[in-house]
Length: 286
Length: 288
Image (cartoon, rainbow over all chains, first blue to last red):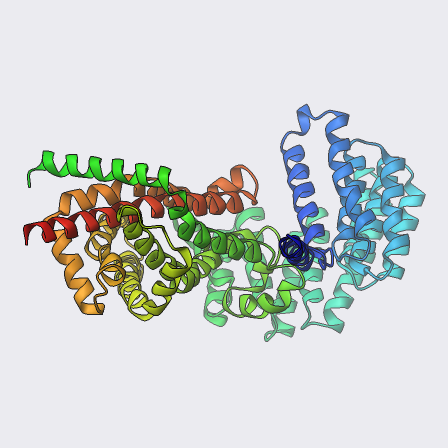
């Protein structure tokens, strides 16, 4: 009888040990991933049905995201969860609360530069929506000085210029676009081989586009093709020239010339296929 | 034998099997042990992305399938494939021994008055392991060639053709039919090895002979329970869609149900065919 009891206890001990072994040592990363995935799923469902969403629906998603930074503060995606909380308040036009949530990111995750920059950019956008122009500009300046090497900081000069344009402040807008262009051109000149230069090229063209300066844009892109023929900037510039001729200036022959130049000069470039499609589109009988 | 007689024989074999199971529920023990091992393997695989198991599983998963399968919810996409490998391993080691054990137990249950010796049958099965595993391995390789071979060829040579899906489905159904046929041809090898103590080739020959003589009865005894397995296979083929509709964890539930279904179908197929084998054996003895 004693023997049987002992066996029983040993069996229980083995089972408990196995269960502890299997579950007890989880560092929390997997559980964090699971919670984040479920919260993101709720977030996406809410975004698809924004029109019928009630404040309780928002709160459910906020609560789901809120658990993540609380339970797993050191997990890599916890700042993203916090960012989504801010976004959810911003969508509801609860700007003070949204700003407060974004500020938590700056305070709690200062080493995560990209998300801090995005949070600061979002704070600026909120100030802009609240018609607090000065604060918005200050925040964007802070973004550019504190996180100069982030995409958000790169976008900031264009954003400022667009802000003035939207407010019909023509003179300020013109100055801001000039400043933005100068900045982007400097980035391209200083580091033409980097991804930053490619992004700056897009933003520079956006500056020209916003002002309707299509010929100036083409001139600048031509200079890039001429000055940097061996870096990704050049084929991208040729493709953009083609698009401007095709869509904005309605000069299909010039567009064809630019696309063909791209195909002949850079046959291995990923833009060759889109260029061929554009050629097909131009040559298609109408 | 005519079709009606064949069907009547299947019916009476099932009747005998169910009565036997009611009298000796311990006949299910070998299949239960296999199911427990499979369940344990599934539990281990469910926890593979987390420490401490990730220490063992992460390097091979990263190397062979990709690092993203170590994260939620992608781990559930890989789970069925990993569980398939685990099932093959469990069947090759524990399962084969348990099949042999079940054959011996069924024979003892048929021999009226004799008590079923669980450990004795386990011992007998273990001693014939190589022969049993050999039969299983041949069946497994044949099934692998039938189910994977044509698909591999189609993917390689007809990848760009439009009729791919239709061809895939036709091949799937032909494959399932051939799986039943192969199982019917080899199923009596296990009782022949354990009950009649035959060697490897002799047991296969014996199995082919019985299957040929009682083809329809054998096929009916195999197909009817295996319909449940086919349903599980079809669900498994649509697991990704099911995951998107519900939750990734549904994979675990489907695989667990699969273990339970295999437990039921294997028990019915192996015990019923073992009973038919014993019936044939006794008929032959009587004729002599």
